[in-house]
Amino acid sequence: MGFRRSQSWQLLKIIRHYVITLQELPNHAASILDLVLKCRNSVRLFQLVIATKMLCFGRAYPAISRILPSCVRPYSSAVIPDEKGFQLGGIYPPLTTPFNADETISFDKLADNLTQYARIPFAGYVVQGSNGEYPFLEKEEKLQIVKFVKDFIKESNKPLIAGSGCESTKATIRLTEEMAACGADAVMVVTPSYFKISMNDAAMIAHYTTVADSSPVPVILYSVPANTGIDLSIDAIQILAKHPNIIGLKDSGGDVTRIGSIVQKTRGQDFKVLSGSASFLLPSYLAGSVGGVCALANVLGDVLCHMHSLYEKNIIDKELQRRLIDPNNMVTRRFGVAGMKAALDMFGYYGGPNRSPMLSVSAEARLVIKKAFVDNEFVPQSR
Image (tube, rainbow, N blue to C red):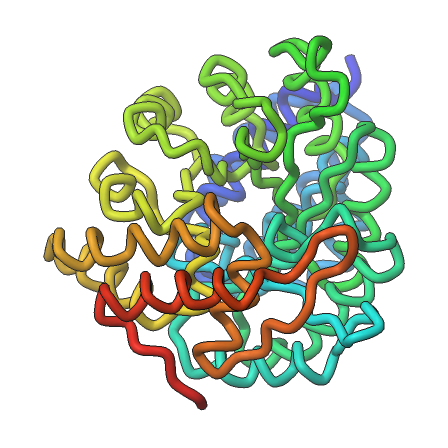
């Protein structure tokens, strides 16, 4: 018999589960080698034994990649992206895309925003999400942003998550590979949605499984029904959570009971849930989420990181959560990305214009947005 794909997944699962630091891996070498020896009829046996030994002695990743069998090799960067495995948790701002007046990307303004964000204890950064006006960007622009942001934050050692979801599986695979090549440490893949009637559980499971099988970096599921009209089902998530290269979910639906159910049904898996909004960040923590990819983090990043820190100390600040609700609604449900950019301008960051056909908010809307922040004791200030 040849090397079984299921056995390779099991081997990878063991390695990913235990690789917190390379120094700890030798303690689990016996478990890994035991599994390898069960594949004694495989022509890959010798290579697998050598690969395991190299992992145990902390040899360089490229050499390991060449030795691992093809069905394992696509995940090797997810196994050892650096000295620690990729772990979800904390607050990630979904970065906006700054545009000049002519709608070209302003990389100088992006750098200015990132310089200010460097003072905030974010867990990492997200690009090419809804707040980045992802659907309005050309492919080359998406890749340029990934490379620019990765290069800018490289010394911080914080991970970069890039949105690579496309309508077709083939296009998603291709963009995922290219974003990984540009420096993305993981990808966040939104549900395909154009042909809604055909996007059932079977289609979603096949789509995400195929993408994860091919992705050189970990995959994060992304459910945002307000934009797509599709809520990735709990049943589908439960199945996909078992895939060794799918590490979590960003859930923006706002149903905290759903988040709790997902956490419960995926317990025991190497799978984490991130809240998709500051409006229900604290309730999502109580339901089992480990952090958030929250639009409001672009404006009030220090406040959201403070809430995360409090929760880690078992301090529940209900008042702070209530204060976040109205400002968050201004930059999401009520005024969307245009409201977000207006708020960024108010708080000393660069928001700037949107890309057509999205229009900037009116002067009257800016007053409404400002009032929502001020009424909740978040005072706009220049930086």
